[in-house]
Length: 426
Image (cartoon, rainbow, N blue to C red; front, top):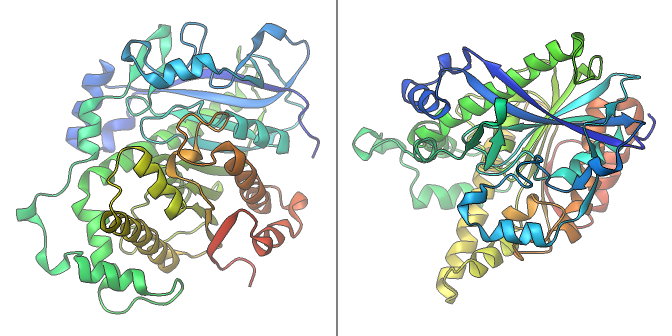
């Protein structure tokens, strides 16, 4: 497949009058109040192959949001990161509103940002995907994104009530004490080698924690999955209707992949396992509440932070530095990875790859054009590792004529990352 010489991008606004109908009553009340009406409005950014003529002035900096708001961060919020972004702009390879090249339909990657992050956060990676032969549709989850612009310039920011609901848990008096995920259970599950079958009720206790106790995240996940479903349905309409966007015929919706960072990664995997047209999903370090009796039906790649890199991030963020606390932090991070991996392996019905880029913290998975936070190697390692591992994985299921044996060779070399588990290459 030919390489895209020019990359364009557009911002679109989608709306649904009934998306929130199947959500919890509390979620419906929060979203209706936040949006000012019951409709669910979403902003998406599309990256695609473009064609001449080009306007040189439309090639903006990475993270560009709009002419009115340069970065997707509340200008009234007095954020230090906004000043850093403005002082260290780097010109992107994307032309805003360039004419799409619709000579052939391309496989589609649906991308979801992390909770509180922006649809533009991983733009260099989106460009790499377009150059590889994909169209990228990045979803701004309204009231869970740092900032999205909707119709008539209306701005939606992170909603505190929605965030509080996300963090809510089942009250102590309503929990089943027989399924408590206590320290002994956590230690026993983490001690098992990955791929071994957990005995007794270890996984039952873990599933009860993530499916029942963490009730807010479960409701939040349903919202994000519904958002992704709305976007896919809207792409069907865009694909067949002429409009000013010029994207008619651009999307090959028989070849769809879903991926995201943090909570967006978890939502992408859950969406993909319920949507027949989704062939593959990737989760970039998102806590994934795999539930009891749930199956992971499609090929899935799961990235984790590097434990040492995450500890270093927390220390730089002000965490205590005494030896006992650092040892506890390392243990808890390690256990989280083991618990989730055991649940994924038990649920997997298809190809699964679990890996951890070396020296990478959670925040290194995003804002890929700049080392803003100084928590780890950031772009120096992550951008190389993500392309080295994720691109051939996507090709394997969305562009099999181009894939060859590159994925297994990549995993066998294991450069810049630790391969934790795979059932892919035998």
